[in-house]
Amino acid sequence: MRIALANDVRAAQTRIEVQSFLIRRTIERRAGLWLLLLLAFIPLMFSVSACSTGSAGAGGKAAEATLHLDTFVVNLADPGQRAYVRAGIDLGLSRPIDRRDPPPLGPVRDAIIAVLGQAKSDDLLTADGKTKLKQDLLHALQQRGPALGVEEVYFTEFLIQR
Image (tube, rainbow, N blue to C red; front, side, top):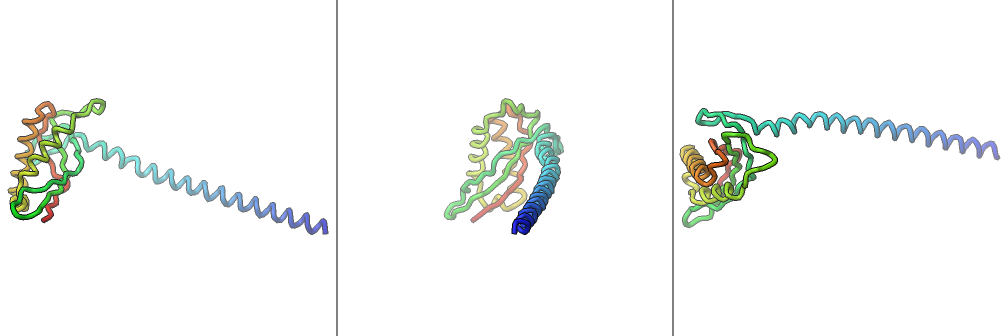
């Protein structure tokens, strides 16, 4: 009886050792997979930060840096109907931004909201209307914040809802 019990204990210990080995191997493989995924996404993180270097605008000028702004959702000035615009906007700047001393975004966002709020949906549905809106935004931003050095306005998202 003692021999059978001892054999059962050894068999149980062997099963535990095998299971422990399999668990360790699975964890190591998964850790390797996570490391591989992390290494795959590191270049993507750097490519996102690289978008703040020069790019060519519609006017042919090359902006020195790009300032990404959060998406705007603004009611439009359509009489008699409710309409709004959802716009993603990036600004092309004449010089790089000092990351330690970012520009105040309050006046920039206020100027953009003021211009977008005066627009009408019928005008914004045409290519000429969007071009005029870009010009109006550029003019307002250059007046409100000349120190920022805005040279271009880029739409990264543009949706009109009626």
